[in-house]
Amino acid sequence: MTATIDLNADLGEGDSQDVELLGVVSSCNIACGGHAGDAQSMEATVREALAHGVAVGAHPSYPDREGFGRRRHFLSGEKLFSSVRDQLHAIHRVADALGTSIMHVKPHGALYNDAAGDIDLAQMVIRAVKTLPYRPMLVGPPNSALELAAESQGFAFVAEAFIDRAYRPDGRLVSRSEPGAVHSDLTVITRQAVSLALTGDVKTQDGEMITLRADTLCIHSDTPGAAEAARAVRQALGDEGVEIRAVAQ
View: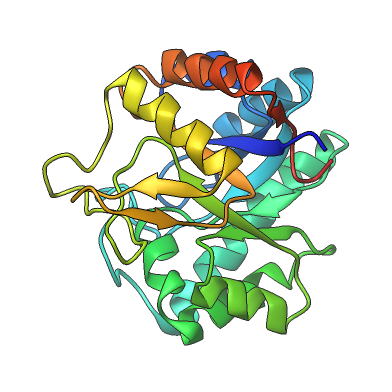
């Protein structure tokens, strides 16, 4: 049986590598107005994704442009619910006008990390997703509150791992504020991608090996050299007989 993996990137955030990445990845998560993005960027990115046959997803966040959605616990309660709901509907309207649907939802940055460990926040994210006229899949860390919330509400869940980020022994990402949190060495990135795709094993920052369930692998568009890294990863995965395919397919 041929191994398959989805390769995704966070796009529509103002980076110059988006078009190149769309020629490599199988899924994308498009900023929809919280940390980045507007109607024009959403439309341009959705159009480009469709032209490349890439599955379109939403990338909602805390409404924190100044902090690029990376400030923890930035907002809560109904104000946060309304913001996430509005972001989802904004990109839904764009996708619908272009004849497609949002296939998955992946929270961004601090919202992703906060909701991964907070079942109430994760349930709020699901409540916002439920206001869409269809049921996209939810993308998040394996064995997280986001996975529990999705499954409790009947949403398909896609377990994600990162190829350009360092991991802690507990399976969480090393904070971006710490040295070595973001990988820049192509050899490290490709080795981590192949290992995650084939066995789920990843070497942590302190050298320990842990195992993570991964249905999709993410590379960040704002990582220096992201497009080059994505091409190298796709080549390395292909050399190992791994097929790149969107989970939605």
